[in-house]
Image 1 (cartoon, rainbow, N blue to C red):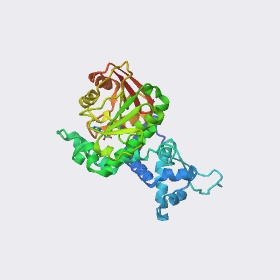
Image 2 (cartoon, rainbow, N blue to C red; image 1 turned 90 degrees about the vertical axis):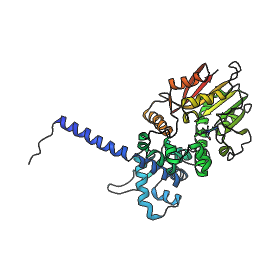
Image 3 (spheres, rainbow, N blue to C red; image 1 turned 45 degrees about the horizontal axis):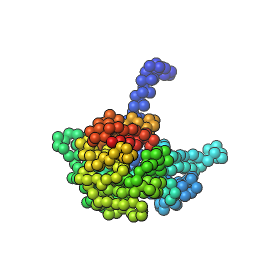
Amino acid sequence: MEVPAASSASTSLLTEKLQGYAELHNYGLAHLKSSALNCAVELGIPTAINSCGGEATAVDIMKKTGLVPAKLSHLRRLMRVLAVSGIFHESTPSSLAVGEQGETIYRLTPASRLLARDGKSSDMSALLLLFTRPDTTVSTFFNLVGWFRDAGTKTPFEMAHGMSPWILTKMDASYNDAMNHACVADSDFIMDIALKEASGLFQGLSSLMDVGGGHGMVAAAISRAFPQVKCTVLDLEQVISKAPDCGTVQFVVGDMFSSIPPADACLLKAVLNSWDDDSCVKILRRYAIPSRDAGCKVIILNVVLGHGTLDKATKEAQVLLDIYMMRGSGFEREEHEWKKVIMDAGFSDYSIIPILGPVSIIEALP
Ligand SMILES: C[S@@+](CC[C@H](N)C(=O)[O-])C[C@H]1O[C@@H](n2cnc3c(N)ncnc32)[C@H](O)[C@@H]1O
């Protein structure tokens, strides 16, 4: 019996419908991409591939990561989903005869190269582990609907944990470590580029105050590149007490809402996006703005929505970071929102240097 040919209109409608069906599966199961990546980083798979000379089979990875052979077929499934998601590159040996099944070979992609520990280049594993941390991420973001429906003033993080992230770092040593290590990893990566591409920002300074500077990775990088700049980190007690002594950076325990010690420049990386506008203005006003003629300034490193390389991955990274900041009272800002905060804090001018992918450098001048 001949099957009647479908009209081209109904074929394209069906194609669209099935595309939507597949996309819904992708969105609904996207958290499995995060958990598969979390698992790969925890197992040390990018490092294992790297230590095999940049390419490895599942058997190589199993041996390097110490997995038991009974898990090999599951490891292949994990590698397959991460390869389809673009975290690893997969190929089969080209020299195979027809019908012969070869072992898939995995290689690092630009993303997973940032997760391989080789002691030389930046390692972003700790940032990935913070983003995918079950204790704080799942509990906070899988009940957003509860928070939207709640008429109270608690943030999603407070609803899930009974306190803000900056109190939890005090109460929970493992969260404190996860946060500090993530910030070190991100700062190591970012500062390597910022100091090459925008070194002029730091020229002529004699002192710099890194406010909410964590374990001092940013300050240490600046003081290595500009030894004449006296760099100080201001942060909370639970952070400073765990900071390693790099010899060139001074650490000060303090609350940026109370006072910020004076310096030629005040730097805030990944700090202001945790706070609402009034809090940001309050923090910026704690920095006693010295004279513009003396080259004084505030340097902010944060997302400026709509600035930077605006490919799909970068745009998505910016808006996902914004939802991530929704866990507290912060958010990622558009240029006009930054302008308002900067002007309300008493600065007269600013410029945006969008050279760090999703992140920009904002220079605010008195
Ligand atoms: C996301 S981390 C960024 C750390 C660092 N700037 C970096 O990018 O590597 C935010 C930092 O702000 C600090 N912080 C939060 N509240 C603070 C306060 N009231 N006074 C000083 N630092 C604070 C946190 O302890 C944390 O180290």
